[in-house]
Length: 194
Image 1 (cartoon, rainbow, N blue to C red):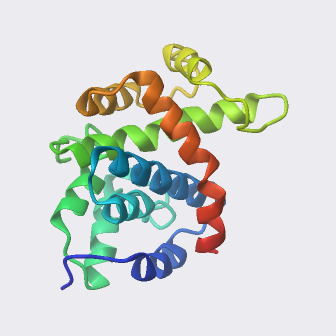
Image 2 (image 1 turned 60 degrees about the horizontal axis):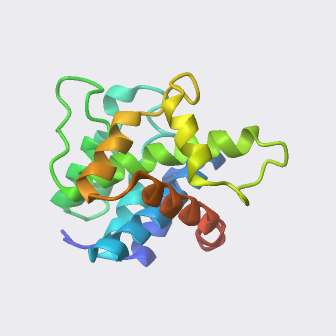
């Protein structure tokens, strides 16, 4: 079993299991933002990025049965020859609270993955509703306003975003700006993954 994974190893697995366009874009966006955060706090950029890339790997195959979400991803990665407890913990804990058996977030990686994958939901929903439908011109204050509106993108876990910001000791606007910048770079990753 391998304790590390490269993008050359991760991308074929990503392409094999994740087929739905919006899930692929979400995962690629999470990858880029996680790498940006890792650079900012001097963590392993590749490891953090791949954790973001693969965190929802099982979403197409569990067919809405969220009791298996995360667990099936870990199973796929183990069957592919990888044993990465830190990554597995982050993948499982990004759905903390979904049921009583879920591991709780413990590490900075856990908190960041859960926060980042949720901030992408707010950003995407905001961009879809913009008249021009583009990310360009999106400001942190606009996203902060939407975060306060609990009815907007209601499935987004705002607590997880706040926890990530707190864990990083970052200003919320800085976290949002970093996420917006990462979202802009998602399309570069999309070309690599296709």
